[in-house]
Length: 372
Picture (cartoon, rainbow, N blue to C red):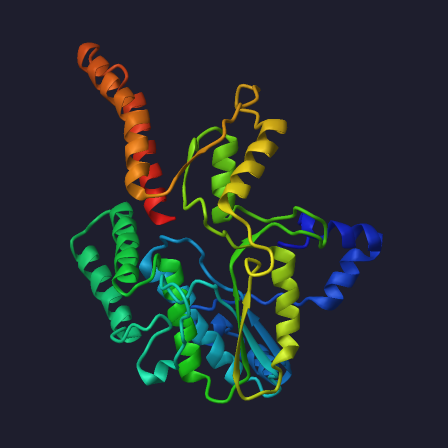
């Protein structure tokens, strides 16, 4: 019920007035659960039995969307979580459809036409032949056991598990842990669903709403939002991207509408239906257009810094390769680091805090460039 007070419901709240709360309580019954657990973590047996008797449509949006999430967390939520939801759905006597919300990037980094084959045929969504999900779970368990036997800190463990996820993803042809674990979740659904009606929705990069309930609503900060906010704050003078690239952004309300349609489109069919929810075919958007729109917006609506002063933005430089990105960062920031090093040597590390802060930001920017 944490969502009910949110701004997304303000239109409905204004329309219904004092009757809003009663209306919501008639429509929604919140149940605590956890998709990483068997039976979705619902311990009340009577409640489970009621759900298995009455539920006819399940929409699974549970996921961790961090590109560099800890591998154990991402595997538990995005992969095994999908399996747990599927097993729960199989017990629902009236089930008409299981709608699983995935991502358009589950096929990895291949270009052109990518033919999908059933997982039981031994191929993954991106054509890799030797991926074994049970082996990946074993890798996670053994790595965690080894780290904890060494007595490492929680921070060291977190970093190691993040790096493990990225390493395993790239080994098998996916760009990041998120896309990799979402792909494995889809594979398990395809392997285990038998004749259960399943619809898989694959949205691209979800952004704020375009129409409903009103333009511009969003909750939290997504990956694309981080770049826009960073640019507005004057922290991103450059963009690492192909200028000719079509960046596929899809408004959140369009994805929600597609979920509603998908819930009935393949209902009661003993098959799996896959639907991509994207915009670039009909409404292609160039990265240069995104840059120009961002510049125009923040030039007119400046971000106000902690001192109450507007931040002036410049038109960001487009860098088309990681090599040119590193060179740009080196030319722009490394001389400052060298000066700070010299000053610290002369003045007994007086500026050491500033040096560490800037050095950390440079490392972060380079990591984000590689990650995104």
